[in-house]
Length: 511
Ligand code: HEM
Image (cartoon, rainbow, N blue to C red; front, side, top):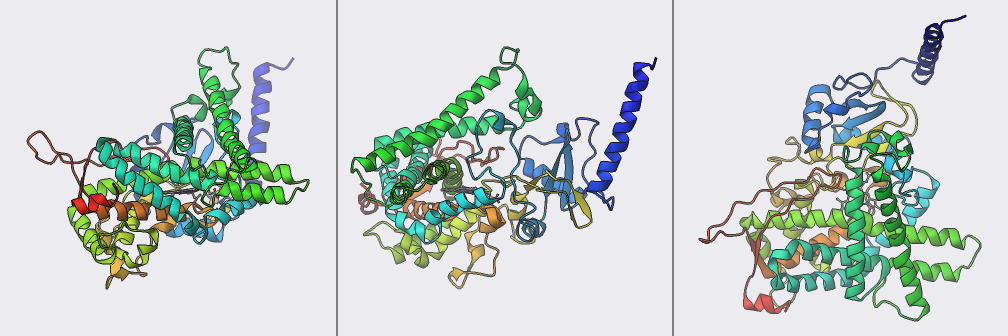
């Protein structure tokens, strides 16, 4: 009789030989993977992954190991890109290889398959992205300028009602812009309810994907444990999130359909109205497929656009409050170009280069998505003499690219002047847009809407308010501390500041 241990040993030997043969087939030239910190058996580099301001630790790793740092987290290869040149080369020239998205373990519970932001590169992604782009390209977003102008003007008024709630007021104004662009509800209360439901979904989703918050993110097979098993409570929480996700996808779209059927049309152009009109015009057999695609595309606008734009707006307000010199220059420009008889409009941008430079500097100075939205490699590949296995997750250290002292002098300082020459935007200075909004074919398709909204917010706040640090009881300014959160979408942690109208005449513009 053969001893079981011998069987195991023989089995192990056969497995090892097969494994070596498989590796040789996948990597015939025996290339090394890029360098990186040494990990532990089985766990790999799991315990070395930083949990706070990860981008700073990854910058140090890049200094130590090079522009491509390879780590292994329990068998999952991750490549951290520390050079903008390599990132752009991989994302643009080798786009078909590096434009997939990682499979999130929570995808076992929450159906993310319909969101093109999470789809792999391919025909379905291309179709939905094209639909989205049709409504949010640079030219198309001009049709939403009246919505942006109305919401920003409402915000200016609401800030005087309860200035200490400015963060929530800004969140609501920007959220309403995106909801109105997506669904066309003109009624404030409907938008309030929608923004609040969507907010609940976004924050629960962000919490669910924080590495380490739920064990299932590091050990996906835990998703298979039975519901009654101790510690399986996360499954029900994720299922609840799935129900909310489905509700948010269908409920506003169905309401938009009902409104149209009953003859209630929005005063402004919006995505849902146009898509529903088109779907009804062409009542073909593929109608249902296209209706679900229309629903998904509208639903994605808030999920991807709100937190990101709000994070940028909060960074903008912080930067203005702490840079009185920047405010003064911006106000001189506004007084000269717009005067004090009206509020600024998005179409004033051409003549307001200093404000345009402030918007660029905000997106560089505070990285909203500091490590980009992770990509995955579609096949085994070689790059710069290294082997990159299929399914490797790629993270782009956007924060490091935006704070590279060789490109941006004094990178930690807020200096809008760096983009200007002879009173105009200097085309020779690197535009933070490529980086801050991602890369290559998956670059953020909502960036024009976001840029227009942030521009008008900056111009309008500066036109009518002085923004300053909070004061203590004796009237002395309190020093402000900028702390970004360490989430995928990094948000400035709560801070206070003061808004005071520049004059009665300015206040009359929004009252
Ligand atoms: C300050 C504001 C924003 C920032 C910093 C930002 C940043 C990003 C980044 C870094 C990506 C990943 C791109 C890549 O994979 O390389 C992305 C993707 C995306 N963004 Fe934005 N975004 C912002 C606002 C918006 C808005 C307002 C919308 C919608 C109205 C939006 C919709 C999307 C969508 C749908 C994707 C997925 C694209 C794809 O996978 O093909 N974003 N964004």
